Image (tube, rainbow, N blue to C red; front, side, top):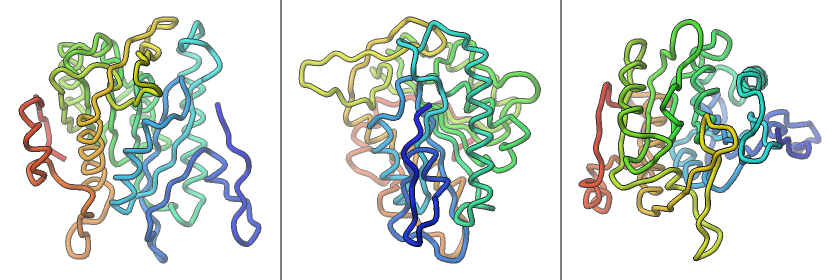
Length: 287
């Protein structure tokens, strides 16, 4: 797990939240009320630039974003290793993150969202069903989590609303597996599944070079990797949909809860509407 160097505030105090990872704050955070926060859980490759696009749009909605490493990033290809033990350790770390957020006046009583990339979806689902942080988890977004065999663990499943995003050309997330996962999760909560036609695994990962063909660890399959094909328009669209989901679930409603310009529903965005033919959506409950 990566921990950054200790962060020191203007008055010399240690900032325990910043010690956990990379903290992004809205440009104009509330001065007198705790703000909602999305914990972005990166997979076994560690914190990478995939999260920046989501953080930009989520913070534009007035929500803080904390990027964290909870999974063991020391093993190549995400394994070999004891995946069950790693998941338990990651859940314990996430409980620690939740406890530190609860002690910070900026976030103490505000709701929490969980955004999970790839294989981090397993620990995020368990956390959303876990009795310790679950009371504050108001939304869970799963990006290409490896739908086959993905369960919340023992006991009840997550009760917070879930947004599940995946591509139909992703060998690690076949549509049939993701449909089955969504249907199973609907037994305990509201689920919105969005399937992008033609999208593969991690469409939001920008390659470092023009001719690079990147690959990432295959969720749930130690030692195996899955090829990545970047889709810039889809990356922007998924970031907008994730931010809109969290804005609806984590921010106050009614008077004064204005929607930021950066968080625009697909139907109101002409460029996104032109691309909407490539999206298939199975909705249990719209966010």
